Length: 128
Image 1 (cartoon, rainbow, N blue to C red):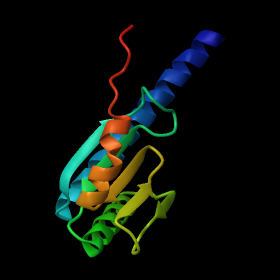
Image 2 (image 1 turned 135 degrees about the vertical axis):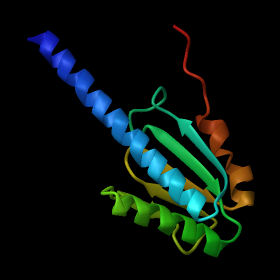
Image 3 (image 1 turned 120 degrees about the vertical axis):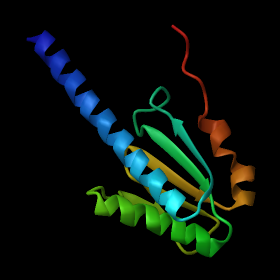
Image 4 (image 1 turned 60 degrees about the vertical axis):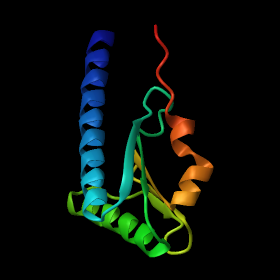
């Protein structure tokens, strides 16, 4: 009985990985369409169970940052994916959009340099 549970868990994990890869690709495509700058995708599955990918992108102005975030969640919605939450839209230099498997950070150049999200999350998995 335990073996079948392991197989079911592996199948579920594969489906989840396919979904997270698909939503990641949809969001990256939207960021490119919205002319986002310096798009960085970081896989964080080895660091947390909360999400699979962090995507960081730079906008050139507060309006551009808002447009990038709106384009990402509208494009995801068109493909059947809903955002869980959004913070900072329309009022800051940093907008975070949570898609569960993917967390999107849309930042001004100054905020991106100051907070260094890539440095916080870009940690190689431990060698076993």
